Length: 152
Image (cartoon, rainbow, N blue to C red; front, top):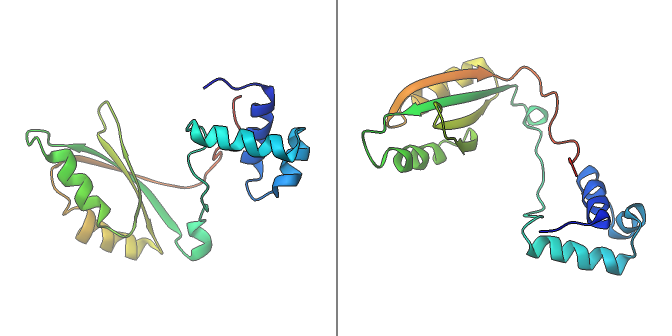
């Protein structure tokens, strides 16, 4: 989809403040409210804006531990990916599931209130997932950048 400068301004301001009232967004982007509405609809229809969603700060809810688990799966079973992902979806503390090409096949983000709870989740729910060949854990210390802007 081709974007012009008005689309870029709209997206930059929309991303920076998604809860901004539409009239204020139109003013900041330098377009009329009607133009803003038409362009947002076109961007949604074109798949540029996929969804409007709440972003949850898990730490604010008491989840002080966040771990990224990287898995290499035993691909001798042709259903390994499907079975692993289906089982991972059933773990409530798994908040993200991503698949990759390369040495790592799947990455899960797991949250827990503390290390004791994480250890319990790891032993009872993560290690029992099917088809794990290798597993590597990275504990989140700090998030430095989390999509604060757009390269457009």
